[in-house]
Length: 241
Picture 1 (spheres, rainbow, N blue to C red):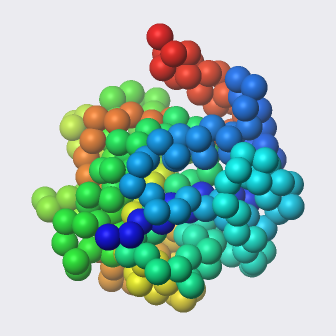
Picture 2 (cartoon, rainbow, N blue to C red):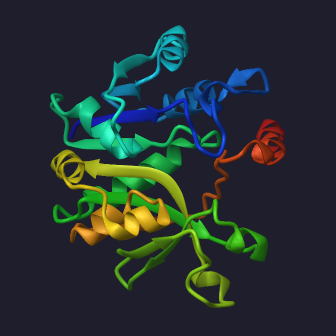
C-alpha cells in the first residue's frame, strides 16, 4: 500500500501571518514540521504543497519535494488533493503546516484508522482534554465520536457539555485519506457547518463520508497564534531532556 504525505502550507495565515517562515529555536516552523514528518518511515513520498514563492524557496532549501498549487484553495486538504491528483497512491496523509510537535506515532495512528475498513474515507486522531482552559480554547478543536470511534462532529466550541474528562476529546490536525475520498472531497463545495466552524473536516461528515478517529495518549499543541510560542518552546525543551 503506497502512502504519500503532503504538508499544505500557505503564507497568509489569518491568525498568524507568515507563520510557516517564523523561526522557533533557530528553525522555521516549516522546517520543524517537515523534519518531523520525515521521521515517519512509511512515506513513499513527502511533498510540501504551497502557492507562495517564499515558502517554495524555504522548502527547496530543506531538500523537500515541492508542488506549486493554485491560489484558489479554501483549505489544506484541497491543496493536498491537487498535489496528489496524478500520483499513484492509496493513502494521502495531510499534515497541517502548524503541527510543530508532530510525532511519527501520530501518523501511524491516523493511517491505522483509515486502513482498518475499506468503507472509511479518512482516519485521524484525538486525545483526552484534561484542562478546563484547553477545553474552552477555540484553537483546540474538539471532536465527538460514536461507539465505533467514528466522528459525529467537530467544533471549536467546548463539546460535549460535560465535566467528564474522558469524553472531552481534542483533535490533532493529521488526516489520512483514501486517495479517491480526498479527490471526491476536493470536488465538493465548502459546506454550511464547515464554513460556520472554519473546519474543513466537516465537509466530509456533511457529505456522508466516514472519519475514523483513533483515541491516543499522544498530546499535541499546534501553533495557531504568536502567543502560542512560549508553550511550543516549553514542549521542545521537555523533549530534549
